[in-house]
Length: 634
Image 1 (cartoon, rainbow, N blue to C red):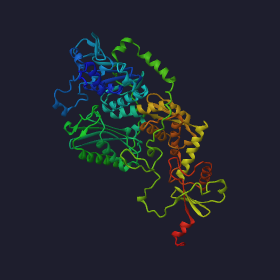
Image 2: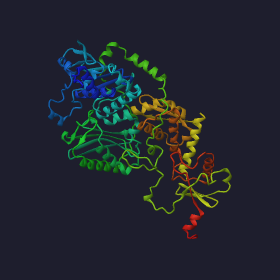
Image 3: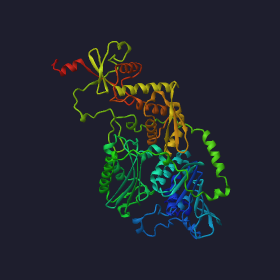
Image 4: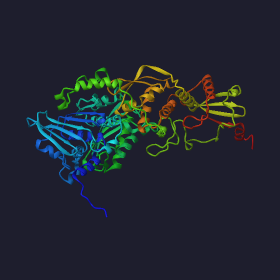
């Protein structure tokens, strides 16, 4: 019979840490939330190697009293609540009292803290849950936490962390949300010695959006406020043209906390429903304020989810308010940022790490990093063997069989549902083995009759009428041409003058860096433009002429939704499938010469009968079927 043992405190602490500290992101989240709860007006966060080797969080908050420092690292020690009843009215970001204990159990932690009333502060070191040193030191008001070598004593958990670049992108994404949640706090984020962004803390949410997303996004925002029946909303709605292919740019906060909730998400999207195409999602940054008894925040270990008490009522309120605001958008002038509204020259000073000032090495570190960053080798290619996952094709290249996040069938932009029109004739798809239409020998026998609906061509050939979808045909020509050039390594690039400047989120920046070698093989030349921006200086000739910015952001959206996995060839072919973005669309009038040229290009393809995602490029109706409709044949 198995013997029941009492676990050691060290083992208990490590198990508890697994529930709180999943990755560097978890540590940064807990420490920054504690800094905010401590009343900090400025916070500096620095990470190295994705936060695995170093996390430094410095704030100018109230600090921790000397006598309380040891107690702060005990399990279930918190200043946020005192009884179970307090959970129903939690207003602070952290309240479980396990953060510091859990972090100290799996890392080497150093804290330097001082309260305003004391002349000196205290420095406390703890590693793996074991106290190492406590001493009195001179220090500024506030607290600095240093977390070194995360999971140094739990190598199995460390093994399951992703690459430092990826872990760093998770932290960068969280820091962006933190800055958007508290525009009244000056926040500086440093990654591997480089300042990624620095907000002023002046309370201007639009300025924070500008620093994170750039000028183009900021110039397409609608200020939004609403207040009724215990609900208050403030923030910005993106104009409908500022849409994306996934929900990554739908950002909202409830009582200052970044959360996810299906009711709030769907309510805002419902307000946009009349203004966006299918499979497109809006950009918005909204702050919801409601009484604590209107929601339950204690339903998720990481406090990322909430439960709304009056969900249906709130859904109606929010969706209607958003729809009304968007309906007024024509009354709002299109204001663009002037030169004076660009990034302010002066940014209030945020607290610098105390121990770094003593070592006076920060400038050298940054100089070394910038030099190294410019010559840094790209990450190794993903391991081969696993096929690329089929991800959201309906959003990027179209797939009438795809299913979106809500579980609805996706329909390609050029596909009409049968229930939405009267079907006069059920045409048959051209049979590759029986017909000889797309051959050079047949060129002199077919006759282009014209174009209908600025989308389809009518072509007569012997005793059949062929109908060609110009978008599907052009799409297939571009796709096969691009894939062939990839295989023969003969990709031609077209320089962009001026280059396309894109301001990227932390996640997007990581994707660009990770797949830069693939982009280069495909014909994209990408350069760092400073801060979180990149300059796209060239693109494949076969994609030239489309909206370069939209094409590139759609590629990033696709990669962000489900990371490409497979050999370099698989990934490059996936990027090549974006060829349809520059293909001629429906509702474009083409002249006779353009139609003839495109048909001739179809001749050269191995399979000209289907576009890259399976839709037919050509259908046919026989003379026999037409005559039956006119009752010439009974």
